[in-house]
Amino acid sequence: MSSEQERIRNFSIIAHVDHGKSTLADQFIRLCGALSEREMANQVLDSMDIERERGITIKAQSVRLQYRADDGQDYTFHLIDTPGHVDFSYEVSRSLAACEGALLVVDASQGVEAQSVANCYTALEHDLEIIPVLNKIDLPAAEPDRVRREIEEIVGLPAANAILASAKDGRGIREILEQVVQDIPAPRGDPAAPLQALIIDSWFDNYLGTVVLVRVMNGSLRPGQKIRTMAGGKEYLVEKTGVFTPKPVHVSALDTGTVGFVIAGIRSIEGARVGDTLTDASRPAPAPLPGFREVQAQVFTGLYPIDSADYERFREALQKLRLNDAALQFEPETSQALGFGFRCGFLGLLHMEIIQERLEREYQLDLLSTAPTVVYEIETTDGEILHLSNPAELPPTNRIREIREPLIRSNILVPEKYLGPVITLCEERRGRQVNLQFTGGQVMVSYELPLNEVVLDFFDRLKSVSRGYASMDYEFSRFQAGPLVKMDILINGEKLDALSWIVHRDFAERRGRELASRLKDLIPRQMFEVAIQAAIGAKIIARETVKAMRKDVLAKCYGGDITRKRKLLEKQKEGKKRMKQVGRVEIPQEAFLAILQTEKRN
Ligand SMILES: Nc1nc2c(ncn2[C@@H]2O[C@H](COP(=O)(O)OP(=O)(O)OP(=O)(O)O)[C@@H](O)[C@H]2O)c(=O)[nH]1
Image (cartoon, rainbow, N blue to C red; front, side):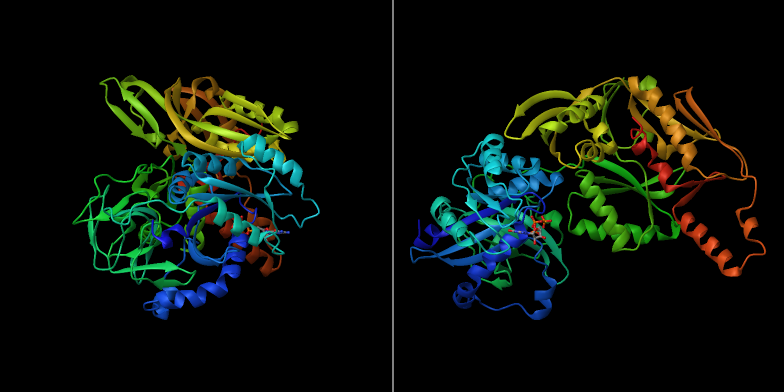
C-alpha cells in the first residue's frame, strides 16, 4: 500500500435527524480548513469558473479534508454523507459501503433512535469500525450514562469510552478526529488492478450534466479514460475528476481508496445509478462490486392538477425532479373522477411528502392527491402475475385467484411506559410480533406489518400514542396472500374511481361505514341531495346522505358592506381551489384523502 493510501480515512456520520450531524461536520471542516487550503493549492489544477462553481450543488456533503494528527502526520479524510431518512436505506447502504468506518452520533439529551440503530446494523454488516460519540454534552439535560447504556444494549456496541462532544462549543472535536486516525483502517484496494469505482451518488447539474460521486475501490480514474457502467453497460469518456473541499476542485486523478466526483458527459442520472460500478472500458474488472440493485417504488398515489390547464407544466416539473431522483416514478393516468394526472411511485411515505411539497412550492402547482396505496401482487385464474399500484385497475373478482399484499419488517424503539399502546396499535394494524427486547429505558419491538396498514396514518398514530417518543425504521419483507377485497365508493350512484380501496375482508364493513360517514362530513352541501355509498362488488355496505343546501350563503350578506361580501367570495374561491367537480358534485381534496383518516376514531 502506498504511504498516501495508508493515510486515507473514509467515514460517515450516522445520526438521527437533529442530533447534530451537520454542525459536527462543520466543526471538522473548520478544524481541518486552515491546513487543507494550503495543501490543496498544489492539487488544484484549474478551479472551476464561478458560474460552474455555483451550478454545482454540493448535494452530497461529501468532503475531502486534510488533518494533521498528533503523530505529526497529515491524513486525508473523506467524510461521506448519508441520506438521513427512513425511505433511503439503499442509498445509505451504498454510502456506508464506501467507508471503512462511521461515527455513531447520539444526542446525549435524547438517546438512541430506531433509524440510527438500523444504519448501525448496516455499517456492521459492511464490517465498518464504529466510533460512538455522545453529542450535545453541553446541554444540562444530557444523560451520558443512560445513553451509553442504550448504545451498548440496543446497538450492541461497547460505549464505555464513547467520546463526549459538543458540536456547539467544540468540545471533543479533536478527540473524535484522533480516534478516526487510530481506529478506522486505511482503505485496502490495489492501485494496479483494473478500475472498480462504486457510485455513491449522482445528480444532475445544469452546466456539467450528470455529476457522479464515486469511491475508487481498485485502480484509478483520470480524465481521458474510457469508462463503463457495469450494471448499466454504458460507456463514457471521463472529462473531469475532482473533489469537494467543500469547494469543488479538479484533481488529476482519483486514486485507489479516494472519494471524488467524475464528469463524463453522462446525460441523465439514469446513466449512472447509485450502487453501480464504474470500470475501465479497455481493461474491465472481472466482476462488479457487490450489492447493486434497482430500487423499486413501494408507495403510489395519483396526483392531479386542480386546473387541467396545468397538466403540461406538471409533466415538465415531474421530469425535472426525476433528473435528480431516479427513484421517482410517474406515468400518465386518467381517472373518470379527476381527469388527467399521473400515477406517481415513491420509495416510501416521506419520499412522497417531499416530492409533493416540492411540486407545490417550487413549481407552484395546485395538486390533488389520492390516498397512497401499495403495490399488490395479483395472480389471475390464468396463472398470470400482475403488479398493481392502482386499486381501480383490479381485474373482476372472478378472474382473480389470489391477491397478495406487501409486508414490511419494522423495528420500533419506544420508552417502556408507552409499549402497551404501541403494541395495541401494531395488533390493530394486523401486525405480527417477531421480537421484543428490553434495554436500559427503551424497548425494541419488531413487527411484521402489512404496508397497506402503514401507509394509512401509522407514523402519525405511532407518534401520538407514544407522545412523540417512538421512532421507527422499516424495510420491505415479502408478499403474502390474504382475504383482500376491493371496496368502491359511489357518489349519487356513480363510482368514484379515485376512492377505490383494497381492504382486508374482516375490516371492510367497518371501514366502509367509517369512510362513508367521513365523506358525509367532508362533502359540502350542494343544491341537491348527495348519496354516498360504499360497496364491495354489487353489495352496498354503507350509505350516508348529504342533505341539499337550503339558502344561498351570500344571502346573509345582502345589504351588508361590500368588503365583507368580497371577503366571503374570496374565501369561497380559496376553498374551491382544492375542489374537484365530479359529475354534478363538488368534492374537496380532503375527501380523496378520507381513507387516511378512517382510523382516527378508533
Ligand atoms: N446545545 C447543542 N446544540 C447542538 C449541538 N450540536 C448541534 N446542535 C443543535 O442541534 C440542532 C440540529 O443540529 P444539526 O447539525 O442541524 O443536526 P442534523 O443531525 O444535521 O440534522 P439534519 O440536518 O436535520 O439531519 C441545531 O439547532 C444545532 O444548533 C451541541 O453539541 N449542543
